[in-house]
Every structure is written in C-alpha cells, then in structure tokens.
Image 1 (cartoon, one colour):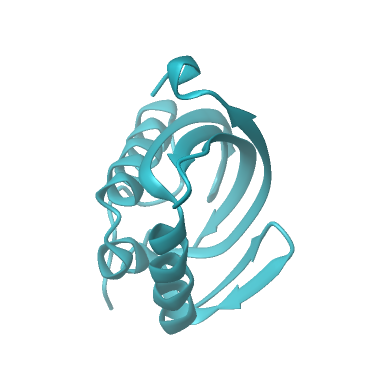
Image 2 (image 1 turned 45 degrees about the vertical axis):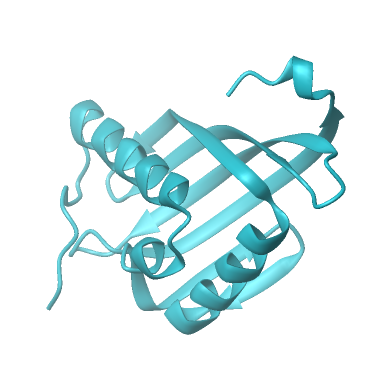
Amino acid sequence: MEQKHPLPPFTFETATQKVQLAEDAWNSQDPERVSLAYTIDSEWRNRSQFINGRAEIVQFLSGKWQKELDYKLKKELWAFTGNRIAVRFEYEYHDAAGQWYRAYGNENWEFNEHGLMQKRYASINDVLINEADRRL
C-alpha cells in the first residue's frame, strides 16, 4: 500500500509538515503530482462542486489552472487532531482578461492510516483585487 508521510496521528510538527507539503504540491500546478496525496477514491467538496477519485481530481485541477493564471497559494495550519487537519488559505490568480483575484478559504482534511487524504471539504470566496494589491 502506498504511503504519504507524515502519517497520522498528527503532532503539531507533522501537521505543519503536511500543510507545507500540500502548499508546495498545489503551487507546482501539476495535477498529477497533487492527486498522489489523495486516496484513489478520495471525496472532495470544492465550493459547490463534488469530486470523487484521483481521475476527477486531475481533471478538475487541469481545468482550474487553465483558467486561474499565475496561481500562487499560501496555506496555514488552523487545527489538527488524530487523522484530521483544518487549514485556512488564500491564493491569488488572474483570468485571461487580466483581472486579478484573491481567494480566501478553509479546508477540512481527513487522512487514512497511510497518510493519504480521503476527504477534503473546501469553502472558498473570491475577491476582485488590483494587481498592485497582490500579496503573494
């Protein structure tokens, strides 16, 4: 069985590591790389969209990064216990017309015993920003 370290149960140190690994993977904008952190049958809620399994994750992320250009993400550990981690995040991107956005959100993650994320629930809000107001 494949494993993705660190494994639960999480400590402050290992939960922080897991969050940084996720941030790094998402900032790579490589859907295949990102998908490997999830179980084959992972369940997502991303905004109002429901995504199931690695194939759908890759498809979703491929479309996302075709529309969200110059994407840059920052994640922060919010809380953890056992095999669960909660994060807050923000990311910035622009669309094809050049309009910049900052997205704010929270994610709840649940991992299996092998350190793969089996559930991801994300609530996200976008705010229009001027390019001069970028922080990331």
